[in-house]
Length: 354
Image (cartoon, rainbow, N blue to C red; front, side, top):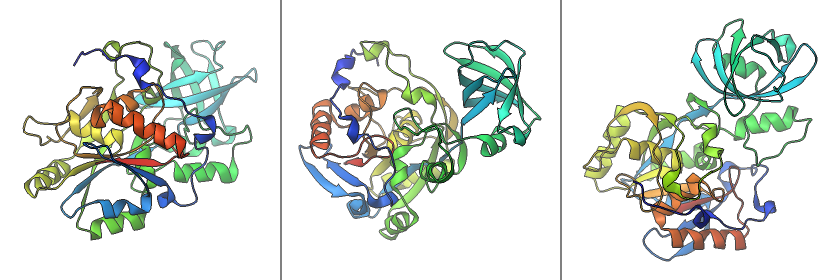
């Protein structure tokens, strides 16, 4: 698809006080804006109402990626401090990272990984574009194991924490910036629509005769990258790793046979399903890298309804939601959410488009 779409159409005014900085006490205590996908209706509800909006025979598809504590700190032997963000482990013991404050670091330099008592060192192998570096970690260990010992939750840049970020607040973020069904480590940002679910809500959904299946999309930092084009048709979409198991493909086939709806929880689940879509509206199992970019007038082959959080202005995620529900309808929904003081972004409220 290469139809033009001006980025200014993704803009809206958002008061900064509506950007949620903390999770609510209960996962399922958020508000829920109901949006008719093919109508004009908007209704204010609570996320606790969500199970009652589902029908027996529907299928809910969740993203079971697990967020790794990807933020970490390094120290030069001169004493200079460096902030790091883990991106990937392309080979054992070699990390691809983003570094901030590493302007004077030289290739081959040895850096101390903090806290120092954990005993890890990092050798700067080489510098890439945009603050990217390759580091060799020693002694060798799996990235997830090292990060569990030295890392912090990779909160998005619009969630602010003070310099003394530690203790109870960090433990809260470690718990709440993670879904209760997270299984597959690899994400550096949470699939935020899934954060609203607790065990009781999932049980209630299944008791209503609704099936639950899982796909995996390891959310990368590209999801926060600003758009640098005026026309979305000129944007190069970032890639992210995905997997759709055979049992999920079979669950979708069964849902279609019984006349149920395929409901994606989050734009990440939707992108996996649409990446794996077959011409008959079913999906094929598989894994790999996806750079699927959905913006108006993209036509969806699999997903019938979408649960999603509110997204940043001028973002690819907002473009996807507009493609799914219609530009004018989403503009109206976002205006209503601002007027009614919904909470926005990762720790914010949700909308159900059906």
